[in-house]
Image (cartoon, rainbow, N blue to C red; front, side):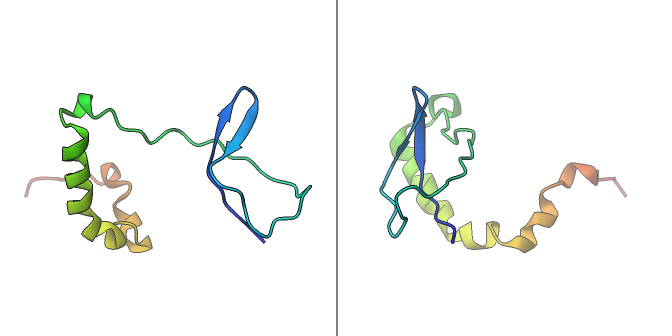
Length: 84
């Protein structure tokens, strides 16, 4: 059984965002540290309201964008465009 719960590392401890359900006390865990996905909106010259509108506008593409078939485009630099 795998259960994922988001959390934050502070002062040598992991603070969970929510309590996992159906996980017995004393269960072993594996912690994976991920780089923050926070975006500096000011550096992108947009405010939080504009970012929310942009996110909502692009959400219609999320399912296609995140599909396994789209991974073919992940390494586009490996195939330079040549002029014909």
